[in-house]
Structure formats: C-alpha cells, structure tokens
Length: 220
Image (cartoon, rainbow, N blue to C red; front, top):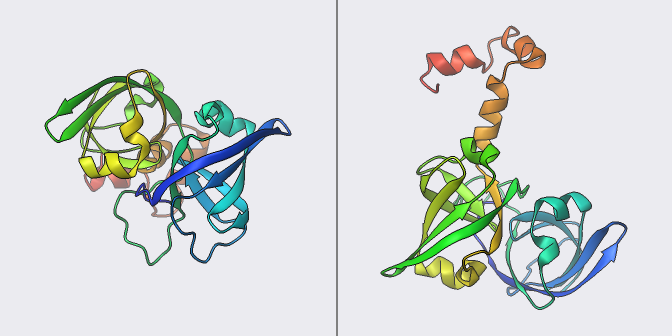
C-alpha cells in the first residue's frame, strides 16, 4: 500500500521486451535506505517489484496487464517518473490509501495558471466517473490529489507549487496521458452494495456490514 506522497523523481535508464512484458532499469533520485530485494515501489502510481537493487538503481518487470492499463509502455529512456516506496505501519498517512493498481488512463484537457497554482482538467473513461467525487481523492501518476470538481467523464484538480516542483506533474501539457487510480474505498463500498447471489448470501449471515447497516448508520 502507498499514500500518494511522492518520495522523489526517478529516471528510466533502460527498457527491454521480456516474455510479452517489459523490464525497466530505474534510478531513484533519493537514497533507498535499507532496501529489500522484492520490495514494492510505485512508479508513476503503478506498484512494481524491485530487484537487483544496487544503491539507487533497481530493475522492475512490467506485465502485459500493466502495459495495457497504464502509460508505462510509452515512457522513453531518460524520462522522469514519480516514485514512492511502500507504506510502513509507522508512517504518517499524509495522502490517502493508494493500492498502486491503476484503473485507467486519463488525458489532460486543459492546463491553466491561477496565480501560484495550476489548474488541470482531465478526461477519463466514463465508467470510472462514479468513483470520482467532488472533494474526494484521486491518484494521478502516483500523486494523491483532491478533486475540485467533476463530471461524468471529466474532473479538475488544483496543484500547489511544491507538488509541481517535486513531482513530474509540472511536465504535463494538454494531451498528456496519465495513470489514474480512483479512491479504493468507493470500489469496495460499491461491491458490497451490488446485487448478486454472492452479496445476497453475505447480507443474511451474521451482523456484519451490509446495505441495511450502511443505511441505518447514514452512509447511504
């Protein structure tokens, strides 16, 4: 799990095709203290397994599934990426709960400078629109952000100068493609409330969380 609070910017040093997927050689722009072979590192919001860790350099494998759902395959050697190591139990949860499992790709519709702030508008597949709510959380290339406003297939975020400086979001222009992870809590709530045989069985067993409980306690 991650928080969407980027630790630093890294570089893609090499990439190659491997078994239907790809392997990336990456270099972090910060010290990897106490690295462990096989640990999870989010690269532009995608949870990947690091191995062959040597100092700040490491390798990751990117599966065909990840290539099909993200923009990782379009990265150029020498390009910059946002990086975050996995959350530790002692860490502050400064952003929101992020799984590192990208839901879809969005496109920058517009970029506007509003004083010291930058307003981005994104277009994304409308089937994910129900998970994006005003003042809710969304992850863009691994960065936890608050939604200013949203429509069926669009949303806007306002980014502070610090975030533009310490992440790759400052490089985005109109037409840029980004990885999007919607708030995981909304997906779980939807799953519990969806009609279906499995959910119907769950709602009549025990006194756990079910649609009646959520309604009774003001959640729906």
